[in-house]
Length: 570
Image (tube, rainbow, N blue to C red; front, side, top):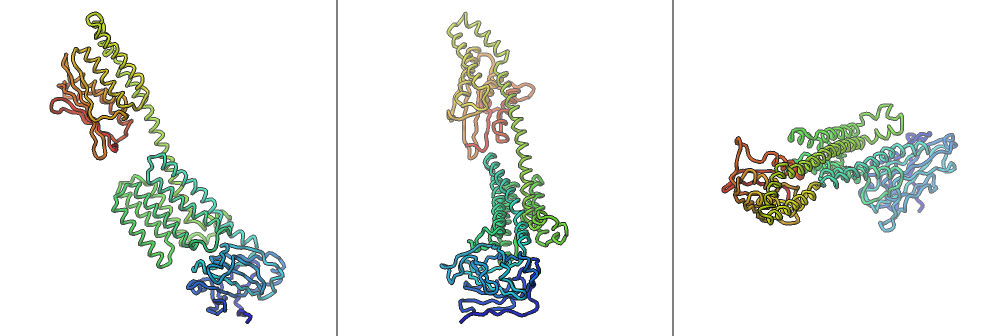
């Protein structure tokens, strides 16, 4: 039997007079289900349609009416816009097929999903002066919850297109900024010791980019009506990921203990579950949770990362204004398309400001690193000068030449050995003077060469033993040589024999180099020996491992021992 839908003759039917109207917001819809068109509700709107149709997968049918007049029809600029999560739909106007979006089926196998937004002109000959009848046949087999009419609107092309322009302009602009912020933080992650905070920030901006790109695609009709999840669920999921990453950013930036992160994670999960149960938007609550965590960290750590806390204040504030529509009633909001678009996306605008502030903070950090690098390079240049100056001291050359002069006449064989040793030491000096790190074998060779020279000068036996050192290691030039020189200068007098022992030991998270000598240290005015030599050594260690070294020097049983501990190295 031919199915004849029921249309209301109520005078409260919507009237189209040239301005955009959304027909499904009126309580004029009659709903049927199944292929036999069983009526299940009347005088419905978009919300009540969802309440009924979302409870089962089926074929559904709605009918509604609207009024228009001949004057409006003659303008020939009446468009229908279907924006929905309806899996597939067919729209008829006054009994004629107007729009087909996908293929309506009676099972998941033969249902073909359509697009989330369609817009097309209504031919003037399909409209009547007076009451017009619209029916929509749709199905929800692929996605049972996909029965939401975002709008079934009438309007001019300009007005309907303006709506899409407003809703997609800000997302398109924001998506560019977010992808830039993501790339900046990825670059920082790979160039600055792979710090987790930069990976998390890159994730925050990547999720925001996906969110904005999805929004722009949605408002231009490029998304399917039935994807792997509802568009609103997708947005909530992405926002949950964003704020989870923000909590991680706060945790790692402030270096809080694990129990604090566990506590805030429990609160985060509770907030997500609560919003899911009561179908609440969770953005506002999660943004305030991230802000509260940053405030806690700020007071807990003494206020050293205020850029993050200030940024999260802006995020929470913009979410609050957006949630309660505090500025949408002002006239200036609608003065320009861009302004309107930005105001409609205030929650995302807050995240944009967060991104810009974090980029500014990172840029400031990079400039600081560049300054530190320049200072380090200057210090290295000074160290190179000190290195050369320290090893070509006038008194060392004078003593060596005087000893050589005597040896040439009295002991030519010893003179030859000394010339060979001096040549070797100056050769090593030339190689090492321009390097920030040298193989430890070269450093040991230089120490032994120097001991050979001093043995000949002092007519004594100066020996170096090496324990636990591997040849492929690298160290700053002359750090052990400096300690050997200091040991000779302050530990021995006359023709005493000397024994030096270079030892390397490993701990759980550090390596320790130590040099022991068996000399009797000569102290002056109760000051530890070392002077400019130890100052050079400290400067080299700081340039090599900033803040990761300790130097201990003092008397031990049988002599003097100096230890250098390099932390975080195995």
